[in-house]
Length: 377
Image (cartoon, rainbow, N blue to C red; front, side, top):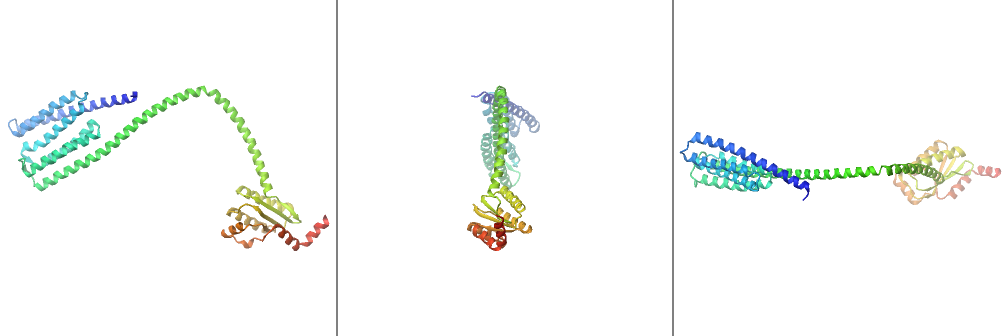
């Protein structure tokens, strides 16, 4: 068994001994006061005085014995015996007094919580309810129907109602105490386990601190290597950024084919960054080549989403404001379907099936520019 478990058991036993001795002292004082009041109130010659005083004297003697047995293995049995004597006293007090009012039935409610507080065991509630409740019901019923001769101070119906109410209250209070005590014991057990785990973690932390002291030199060397690696990663990141920028430019190059006519082939998949680069490329191409016609070749595009479609429309409107015309070629059936499904006005798109047809149409519409180009050549 672990040392922590042994310490917990010893602490629990010491606490149990203290609670049992405290219970024995309080019970002794209470029984002594009741013993003296019984002698002063009823004298020593009446049946009530003789019976009650005898039981009180027995409880006094039992409390003294319980005090000295508190540290033994019979301590819990002694507590149950003492509580049973109290139940017996409650059962006989109406018989000795010769009257029945039902007021003494309330005291039966005290035995289960006393057992729980002293023993700190949820089984004590069940045991004392199993003892107190049948005694209260049987003795009370026998007194009400007249088998035990007593004078009823109220109607039998009221006594039966009071008896049933006390029985229900005992069960309800017992159930509530059982649930709460069970929960408290679970929490206490979890706290003990948490403390043991915390101690274990503390030992582990101390061990790790010792190991850390041995690794300080290696950590310094690792930090140096890490700084070198970070610098290398920074250089690689810069190269990757340059390469990404080059790829973006190659993915949408501006190709002049005629005076004032440029072709921009769109290849691959366009994310947000490439879309922004595409807009800049188109604007730079228009200014650089003084283009009045821009042909967007979408033959090499893999897919078209809503963001790309709306960006293209924004670019087309912007080029209109700049005085340039846009021709879109190579739209796939899937791309056309996507444009229609997004609710985009396709009337703003000047679309042609292929790049060849677009160039031929431009040549037919502007033959003088082509002749001018031929003469320059």
